[in-house]
Each structure stands twice: as C-alpha cells, then as structure tokens.
Length: 366
Ligand SMILES: [Zn+2]
Ligand SMILES: [Zn+2]
Ligand SMILES: [Zn+2]
Image (tube, rainbow, N blue to C red; front, top):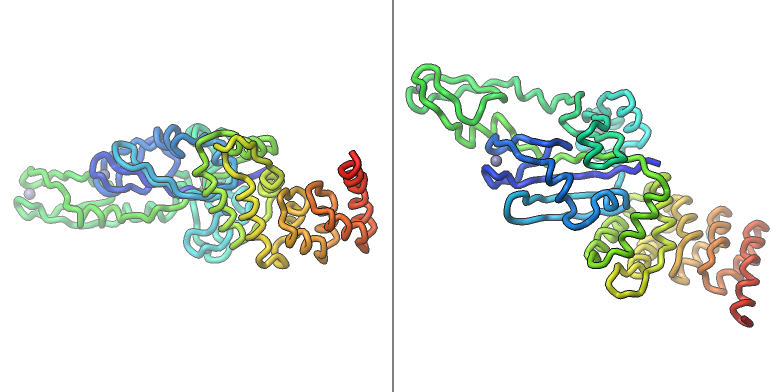
C-alpha cells in the first residue's frame, strides 16, 4: 500500500539566523539568504519531530506543525498526510500519476495546469530519511529539476564599490566577489543577493512510502501506548479536520481507519484519550454524511467503537446495502441498532445482524 506525506521544512541558518526553506531531502543545503552551507541531514534524520519516533509518525495519518526554537538546528516543520496537491493550482494529484512519474523518473505534470514538479526516486539519502520511501516529488535535487533552476542563467551587473567598474553576476556568484579591475573584495548587499537567489516559498516535498498493514497497526499502538506524547492527539485532530474538508479513499487510509476506529485506550491515564478522538471523528463525519465516500462509511460502520447512537441510526438507514452490511458486522453497537438491522429488507444484512443475538443472551443470562 502507498501512503503519501507532505513536508514543508525551514531551518534557521547558523550564518545569518534567518529561516531557510529546505529544498529537498539532502545532507547539505545552501542558505538562500547568506549563501552559507547548512547541515540539513541531522535535522531530517535525528531531530525532526523532537522525541517522537519519526518513522511511526510518518506512517500514521496525522497533520500538524512542529517548531524547535533557539540554538543551532532550530527548525519549523509543517506536516500533513493529505494527498499531494499541485503547488500552483492546488489540484489533487492522483497516486497513480505520482507512481508513474517515479517509475519513469520524469517530472510530474499537473493534469489541470501543466505545472511540472521534479521527481526523485528513493536513493540512499531518502532511504535514510524513511526506510520504506519509494520517492519524493518536488524535491528540487531531483534529477529532472526543471524551471526551478533556470534563474541561474540570468545575469546582473553590479558596480564595484571601490572603483565603480561593472561586475557581472550570475546565480553561481559567491557572496563575496573580487573586482577584476581594482582587486578589491565586494560583499554583495542583501538587495543584490536576493535578486540572484529569489526567496523561495517553502515548497512542499511529497514523500511516497510503501507500507504494509502491520506497520499501520503499529503506529496506532505506538501513539496509544507511549506516554507523555498526549500533545500529539492534536495532530490526529488536525488530520481528521482536513480529511473531512476533502475526504479521499485509498488502501492505506482504510487500514488506518480500521485500527484507529477500533482502538481502545489503556486506562493508565497518561496516554492519549482515544475516546475523545473517536468522538471528534464521528462528530465531523456526521456532518454531510450522505456525501462521504461509501468506503469511508463502511470502515466506520464495521470498526467503529464508541459510536454515538445518532450515527448508528443514520448508518443503519443508509441507502447503500454495503454500508448496512458493514454495520451489522460491528460488535460494539447499541441493542436497538441490532434490532433494527435484524429487520433489514436485505437478507444478508438481517442474517449478519442476527449473529449478535447470542451475544445479548449471553449478556443477559451469563
Ligand atoms: Zn544564512
Ligand atoms: Zn496545477
Ligand atoms: Zn573595483
């Protein structure tokens, strides 16, 4: 199964203290403000997500921002598991389109606006970042980097500050340039330097990983069991909020939903409160329920625990037989819901719901 993750990373440059927009999954990057080289690798591999297990975090469906302030290695990170969008027109990019681009190592072309984004297959640097990575889209170190590099050929003229001779500058010029006429060194002022290196916006990097069911299950377990990371429940909420703004369906998301919705918290009191997250999910889901994809409704219907009665009622009356059949398989429903499903007009649904009868009797008399 494929899962995509989007990163926007900025690192504080030790040379000029400005935020530098990271251009890709690289060991070293050149500061767009002062031209110094910045060690990106240690942040990407060791410090990103703070104390969190980075791989587990990336394997989950989460969204959030993380900021480490002060000192060397300060950074800002925006992260989301929503599907990649064209950075120009925000059109959603289909998984198949991204996979094909990686396979052929050709830039991804947005079907809506023809904007091209470079593609980079998983090399050693990318594998170090995430062992299951298969590639990164929009990493400008990708070998098919396109117009992102074209401004390098543009030429500027700068007047030597000592003798006034015209010096030719290109994107490759160093921050300090020696005058050919008077031999004096000129330190290029910010106004010139930023013209040569226009301050890029923090471009999104789209990471694609190949993940299996067990790894998805493990990430849910991790967040439920590891103490003192309660703060990350906000990142589950962030994802749920953006998800219901633009619901999508793919294999890894459905598996994630299965384990997320059926998860039960251990009651030690330090861990994430999964009941609150479930409630947030159901409250978001019930709005505009009719318009949600059937697969989403089926996942909630079959695996949902702590489902509010109002949602059980709506799902048990859903037009789609598959949704009601999925609901009938759920073992955590109200008695009233089973009773209603046992009278369902579809015989598969009523038969499935009938299997829970024994359960009631056991509960009543056992
Ligand atoms: Zn700098
Ligand atoms: Zn586009
Ligand atoms: Zn000069």
